[in-house]
Length: 302
Image (cartoon, rainbow, N blue to C red; front, side, top):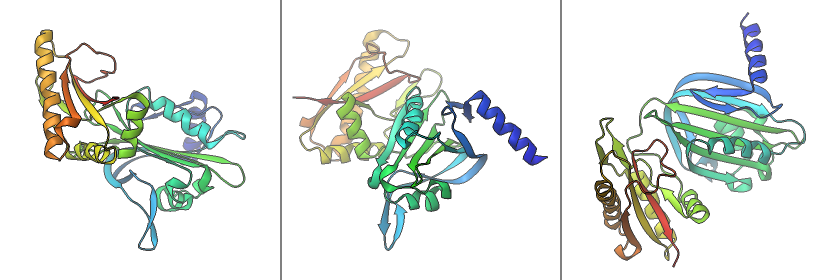
């Protein structure tokens, strides 16, 4: 009877064509075959925030983050003739429709060995493929819920040309007080590609219209690491505020948010000459999402 229910569930999922994991709906890859599917509560999920590297004779992920919450896992086989890049990009494009932040991304041999991802990390042997045809990403998706989703995405092509993809979606059960930082490489990529990066978790809203600044150390250190690597970069810290108050007050408050982030960076050793703070209130609503306020890190091109 249990087997029958499982088969019926899989058929319905394939017909509907949508994966709904903890209220984060994701469209299924067309004609992909679901190999494994689980929905469980976990208190020890390891989110990989770095590639696999050989440490003391064994392969280990260099930035593991242990999390707990509701976990939905899907292992898919893509249709013949579809590449690992096709599958990876299909799901990544959907994540971009949400409030989305890349935490880490790697591809090909920069990820380490496919054997490590398949057998050590995901523990699914079908994911063991060719190192040069693999891609991994870790992402944070925020919604109106205080607790974000964390998504792991891994795609690989095997020697027999079959392509497999792993999608893990975790809805955490408690907020990470120190924050989960993007890798410096991901922040640099964002700044190079779009010219700006939204500093995460900076402004807290108590639900009564009151805001306060909270600078989580993980996010602060990641930005410091970026500026340490990019010694010739100068950045603008641009505060935004959308409170139901006059524009002048919005601009004053948003300037304060930017100034506080600037001061925190200076305390970490970043020269004041490399930092400029601005407050523009609600004059730039694009990209607001569910935020009541935000500070953007903007790369200045001299």
